[in-house]
Image 1: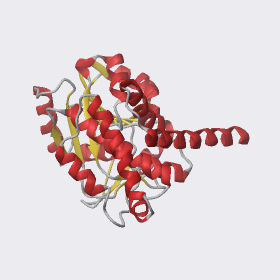
Image 2: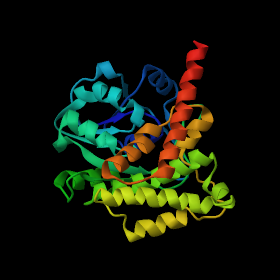
Image 3: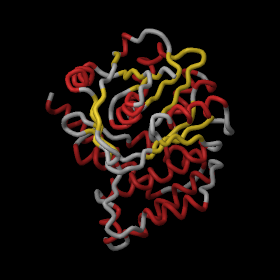
Length: 312
């Protein structure tokens, strides 16, 4: 399965690196700076499952020649529109596009450009990031990649994709209800990002604050209400899992969105919190705490843009 990995950051770098290590035909579409970095030292993955370095074959956006069987999209949501234009030449009649971005809005953008038949639903469960040297650092052992047909059910291509990923020691799991899975992750992420960004603290610290647990679950219930109104009622096992997740004393858990704020970087605020707010409004759901969290991150982005303008 000839594969184009769009981006060689934490997600694309990890999953693409595992495929290369297993001898699969993989090309990374990257920016010139990242291409130079990978050419110098290869792509290194630091992992609880064992460190390794691979030689990464790269291509710049304007240099794509021919189509691919699989396009694995691992960029940030705010980079997707540009990435779509850049990898469009790689998409043929039978290409599978597997996005592993946060949220849901990217599915509409991808299907509008490439058609429903080429786009799968997908999500990853991995804790990873890039260090100062451009190495992919996996913080926890889990490396799950869940995918499925947007319309639901199983298919020959999702079964083939499962075998392809597992042959590279990636825990690829096909789902017959991928939209349900993605909605539940959207609820979890919106709750985690919303409350940790709003409070600028980890879950454990918020729990230790007066009213902290109540605030977490107010936001969680708002997000669950949106999913329910959209036709994706959160399942009992999901509720139980997230209740444990959000009540773990001394938990260091915080959203990557908060880590972006702490670094002074661009966030996916509008693509996650803004999108969830917009869906709530369309469905007539009141979400006062979610609205506040969205405004908080948006104010950070405005202040960041103003500071950048003042420096130029």
